[in-house]
Image 1 (tube, rainbow, N blue to C red):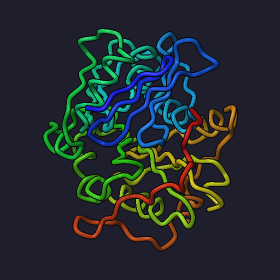
Image 2 (tube, one colour; image 1 turned 60 degrees about the vertical axis):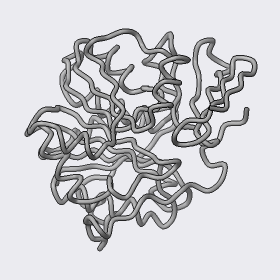
Image 3 (cartoon, helix red, strand yellow; image 1 turned 90 degrees about the horizontal axis):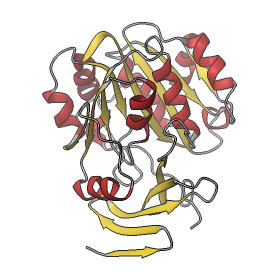
Length: 285
């Protein structure tokens, strides 16, 4: 395994590419995890409630509103990265039972060694394929499923189908929430198809993103909040509008117009997400 260490920087080959742990120059114990030059996670080891990436703050807002403050949740995280959201949930909702599924064993070991998470028997990290983990879950076993899975910089096709979303829906409680990070760019074909796909099984939904991304002007992250009950759109709208980088929430007729005539994707026809243009999520090291 290739490994080199610069000043407070670790570069190592892992199963999914070249991983780099880069220190944050503005925060003494904060770091960015990059894979093949694409920023995947940012964590502050002293303050896990500090969330650097705006899409992560939008996901955290949805988690905050999923249940009364500090109530423990049963959470399945699909995609581990540097465990930004699992650390956040552990701090903001102590007592939560969390399972993190990450397919890259070498990446898990790198994060465990260089960015260790506090010992917590309720936070379990397993090396496993995301779809296999969801399929094996018991009916109604999770309050929240968080999907943030990328092979390189793309979401795999087998995690983009109605059949996969159906397994997620089965694993959720009746009022559970599926929270998905969708990365896409103009003309947002994958994002529109993903909203249509998830709504086949979890019909109550809203979509959060920058206005420029929603208008198809640039590549970026869109956060889908879906379930069997209506999402808290007014509260989410206030939280997102008050962020350092304000975003928009699409629901109801606006979400219908966003989806347009795009059809849901099934196994055998589903495609992975569009890769970002070079340098989109890179960090200068």
